[in-house]
Image (cartoon, rainbow, N blue to C red; front, side, top):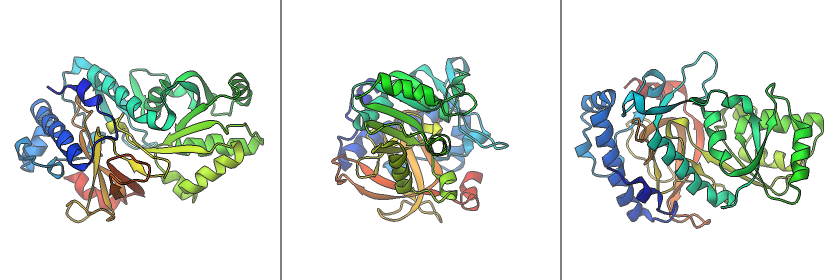
Length: 355
């Protein structure tokens, strides 16, 4: 049995390459064996490809599931009555969504891991929090979307909070003004999803010519760039535009997905996304899924120590990226640091999804 108290006691960016590999490999071997024994669908997949848990000798040997599989199948590794929450991905209209089943242990460990990772960007003190979304997202507490999961997770870092948008997605200007007046001269935490921030916060600030002073703010955002790429909005343009309308200077992106909630890859002050000791990434080549070299772009595989109630500890995403280095980021954090290049074309990923 994995001792998660011991696992999560390890400082998130403290282990160099060799020590981290040994630490995480044992966890991956244990989780693969657990899901193989407890999830019939997972066992069938591994048997079909000859990927038994005993064959895992290194991190690159850990079998991966295409992340799209969770859109088509209900995969769990605990009894149905142990499930306390179902997470769903934020699918567009008419598309299937992933369903991720959490038991009490997995949910608690996700929260603990998130807290351990986020402190590097926002500090240990709980801050006044502006959620750049609407409270309507949290209506069903037993079934959360990716947005709801993010809001719930980051809410634990706020000692007072306000939603910037009402249920009709209108900007609550009076509420924001009152909140900032109450917390004048304090550091403020802002959290939201990238596209939501751009469309429903930044663009509405411009429209209403409302320029709140958020120069002491720290913004955490994630959720992908696909819709903003269509608008030709880069990360640099995103940060500069927000700075112009509200003065915010500290903006940290994170990479993550509902299929591995809690395992987020936070950007440091140099803009690099980092894998903590609770997670890792491997870049896979498009043609044969072999591991790519550092600096070589390919498909992102994410590995997480947290998924116990469902077989989501090793996933092949639908994103393309590149590992930039390991243990030598100027920020001082140990572990791999990388860049996400964008979504893979559907035609490219379909092959591994069919598998």
